[in-house]
Length: 131
Image 1 (cartoon, rainbow, N blue to C red):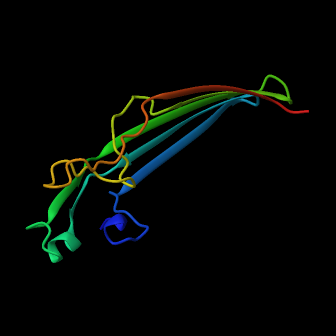
Image 2: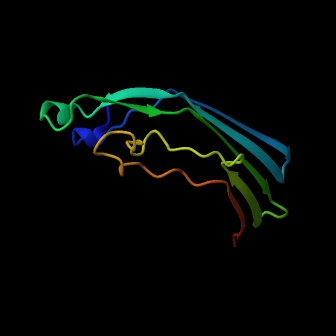
Image 3: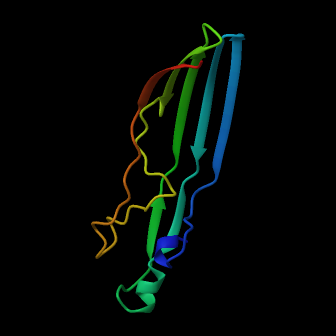
């Protein structure tokens, strides 16, 4: 069920599988990988609209599966200086998170309703200094 259909807070999402691995090559160098896979999900929506006679039947909302990989590298050349490189959505996956508004563009009368797709690949380099 979708929370926004019944003025609730929740949203349906497929089973989500996560794996995170961190490895320290040395005391000053660490790298990691995070993998997430979300199973596809199809749910019937527009229950209230059917009850009110606004639409003739329920709409089957498809939420496709998606796979996301994130990596990071951290280097601490001194006790006070740290460099981080993070890459999220490494493979530039095009997807709509199941927790956002679904894609209703094929539902009669709801053609303009579709949640945003997630950001593509994001690369960030950061440096921090503590004193």
